[in-house]
Length: 230
Image 1 (cartoon, rainbow, N blue to C red):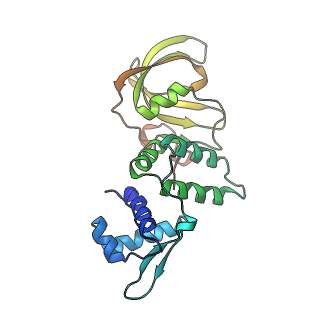
Image 2 (image 1 turned 45 degrees about the horizontal axis):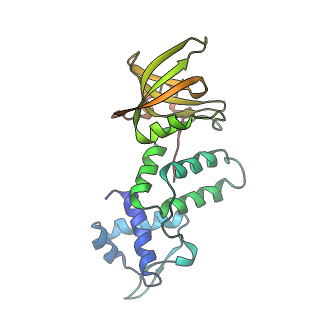
């Protein structure tokens, strides 16, 4: 179990037995890690706003306030990422901090599989500046989530159209546009396609195996902000 999955599982374990405490030693044995690792995980959850406190004594341990936490919710990975993108536009406002805390609380109660997929999807989104305003076709968004090859009809900056198969890897957004970052099979290279220039799109059955890395983007890293759910 990776750390992200373990954090969600820790919250659910403490919710299930609340108001009874669980000791760091018991949790360490449950998740097959050291007590020190559990203490670091609890500290991270507390910093994220999860209402966990320690009860002293021989029978003490960690307790979560069930009245101030959410049970597992039916939030999809795409919905969690949508909230993170929306919060990006709150930067510099009085609501940026509370918005981030609210998102972390929601992600913390997602089932482990959905939470892990939300983090993977967020890792395919990179933003520049305040974020984009142009729309992304729904079928393109679905293909990025499902990792399916797309056949797109695309107009370049001169208005010349072409039909090409691409492997969607993620998104790049600046203050004006969304771009689909994809491996273009026609040119055998990584390309960015402005989504408002995609005229036709069809999802194919072939599954994408490539992964997008920040180093693949020919943009100074200080200008690019990978989307995060934490």
